[in-house]
Amino acid sequence: MDYEDHFRQANRPKIDCLLFDLDDTLYPLSSGIAAACLNNIKDYMVERLGIEKSKIPDLCNLLYKNYGTTMAGLRGIGYDFDYDEYHSFVHGRLPYENLKPDPVLRSLLLSLPYRKVIFTNADKVHAAKALSRLGLEDYFEGIICFETLNPSHKVTVSDDEDDIEFVGSNTASMTNVSTTVNGGSSEIFDIIGHFSQPNSNGILPKTPIICKPSEAAIEQALKIANIDPERTLFFEDSVRNTQAGKRVGLHTVLVGTSQRVEGADYALESIHNLREALPELWEAGRKAEVATYSGKLTVETSVTA
Ligand SMILES: [Mg+2]
Image: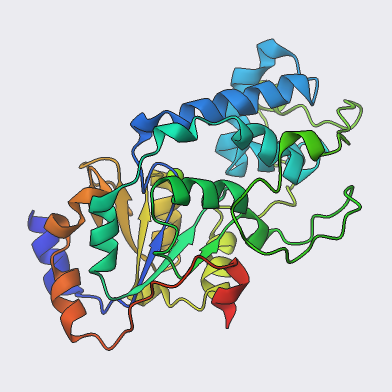
């Protein structure tokens, strides 16, 4: 409470943009999507990359911790696979039926006269499906997703499908994706062995994948969407993403807990608590000369204009 008063008095940022993470931010962790996704990732590692089952928990932890996402980590340590195939495998079987239309959030978004942009590490098909299930597909100006930050990944797929229209449908069903996985272990970096050595120097192979919580990834996203961090509120359920956002100058809102941590200017148990926690957004909004963005969900590149 004190900090909020203090924050309001000391900073009172002029906000003109709301930047939202998607998963576990616009809907609660209790939906079970995140847990199902993690299981699918583990299955992918065993079934498609041929990784020993007993190594999966440690490997997942280390990759997630050191590379931002398990996927980025898998590429970092040397696995080669098609990104679309990976995404369709880990997202294709998610229990999307657990996501229900959210009229409360819809009306909150509608009443806020600021730019609203999604920033997710997930692929565009997943983002579109999740937003559509939540009934929120028309409430954002654009989506910065995996493909936005990692555009040139057409290595093994011959179809020239760049710049396909973002329709959020089944463009990546599991059946029509060729399996071009090279699970060979000859050049795989042993990250578990690396960290089990007492004097590991901490130098890991680099990943080609750009994703949160890398500050460079966040800065790139801001640039693409023409977002000024000092005039933007960044909503995230991940503490480390929130902290990275803070480091690049965003005002931050940690979602999913009421416990504020370092790097979070605000903390909300649920995105539904927005009005109680940040009433000034509505007060300031009345004076703002910013148009309401409620156009159709568009391809991420439309944000660049
Ligand atoms: Mg999230």
